[in-house]
Length: 545
Ligand code: 16G
Ligand code: MG
Image (cartoon, rainbow, N blue to C red; front, side, top):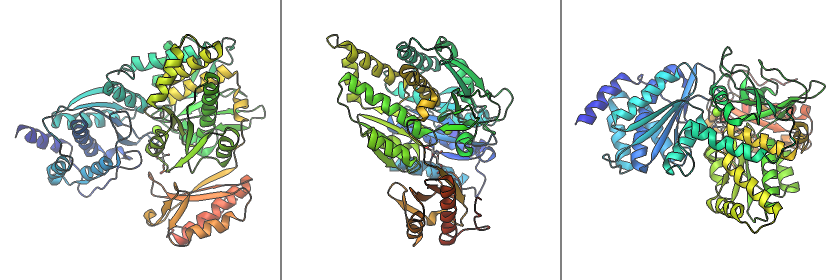
């Protein structure tokens, strides 16, 4: 068989090091780039099978997001731009770990289980980030696609959300937009310009935004997009990749975890700044006040700003649509209280990982989902989009309703609904602040975050920790939850939970409390409980102070 022969020959060019075992984790495979060549080839194969199975275009993105430059990774994108389903994540792991001589059998196993018609056409879109290893690794993906006779389109350097967008456009016959990077800029920027038209008294100062591009793909793409913004947003771009190292002391993850500004940017007091991560699917905002104090506005603050804005517009438009905010256990308790008690919106909590939030958000007319780390977007149900559309086209409604309906319509268009998108989120946030005439300080003051602390604990096998209730409670090992419960009782307004990381070999500990000292002390207490009850390795966790 010709194809089989081609497969053998090509897979020989991308051999698997014997014994190497990797897992398709929360966000795909991610490890040192040197270990990934065979994984990429095999993900090219798998994407081709997935395409044949779904009779749709599938995406493969080569990136390791916020990881250091020497790492790389790969994620598969399903037809509507979503993350691939759990069953296929399982296949990805099986295929990745089959020894060289078992590869054909592993493929045949998937073909059989999924009853795939191998004569069906296959189409795969491939994208990559700016890592030096990405060029050859994305070529390995392309080799995998052609080894199974699939067609591929190489988008080259794109952000992760741009690739998700292209896949969705392609599979909706361009109803979602044109499947080109130009088309993406046009759609988003046009919507942004329409939105900000309503904020005509915006000064140049208010139109200014400082962006930290994490020395990655997001910086390149912001540059590319700028002309489409027609000076309605003035961006000062730092960490644009011209000299600094990717994600090194910069980017959204650094800023969120360290709770401090990235290096390499110029911050003036009171000015809005934001940071992207290495593949531009996350964003956080921040500013320094006149005393030089740093203030972070994370995914929770973003979700609050967006959901408040949408809720006000729905009221003004007289549209009866249900809006919900989806968070994870990491959401600051103050944000959850504010959303539920003051804003009166529905709040749902899911497990960590975009696919869980995305899924939960799909259950509402309008689902706003954000992880505290800045990954998130807004989903509109088909029915909600149609209602908004109809109202915007209705000529017999009063001016207030008309204005709100048009704003809602353009809000839908500025959002990348396929996945969290730093560029799209940035445009939406900038538009909201402009329309509301709101400063970043005013946005920050909507509610005050409870002091919190995140720690990690090394244990011999993190799988001994099993959680329930969207990771808020531990069901094993025995006694751990009871220990956490009694420690939490020692502090005011306190909360704590632990979960095994999906991307690192550690157990994560989160604690929040009335004061920073209490949050730090509680996080330490809980770390000790994990260390003692869940098989800690290395030295005992030391107190923070
Ligand atoms: C991945 C997830 C992110 C999550 C993080 C948690 C996607 C695209 N990314 O980066 O959403 O917050 O993992 O990491 O799903 P952890 O399990 O190590 O805490
Ligand atoms: Mg990312």
